[in-house]
Length: 261
Image 1 (cartoon, rainbow, N blue to C red):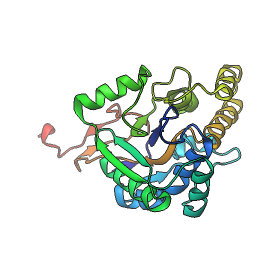
Image 2: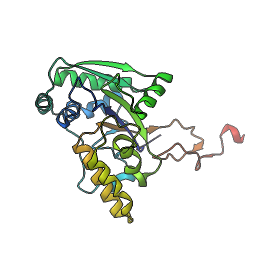
Image 3: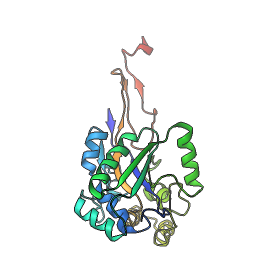
Image 4: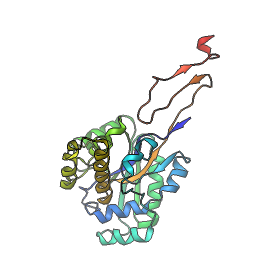
């Protein structure tokens, strides 16, 4: 059983790096254009994911958030990616370090393959697991520098569909964001601070969409995919999957289950 979950897999971009030009929006856009998301979904997720356009995952429950001036995933455009990388001051042969948190090493290698082929970079991939992964997340949250990576691939979910911008956008782009790896973005903070003023659902949705559009246009992350949540369920169990969290509130054992014999 699967459900289109409200989770995202993205690359945190170190905009503080001084050896690759990730401070420049064009370089960040180049990385996004270098990745073939359709191939990533097929090879790493076996089709159980959806390409990301921004930070709002594509699910039935988030459709309203994505509807105004609908965002579309970056195309795989190698020639434009190469031009943007060069325009930002990047050069072929530079080293790009990609780190992946628990379980995302395959994703990292596929992303590295695309970037190497498109931009001619030398990409080093490392897998961070267990306590090392915990320590890497702590260091990022506390904004310790220098960092050992240029791109950190992470998976993050949300607790409430109503608060897409409050959770995911704040986490990756906000001043208090635990996954922000670079200077605070004043334009983002201005939009985000205005969010509580919107008290109707439609106004909130439109404003959240504007925030997502800014994050995408500024390429404040490497937008990859929204993975499905997969469950193995006993045929004698009625299970209702949730898009946000793992819940057993509506789970029920049917007649024939071993626990009722």
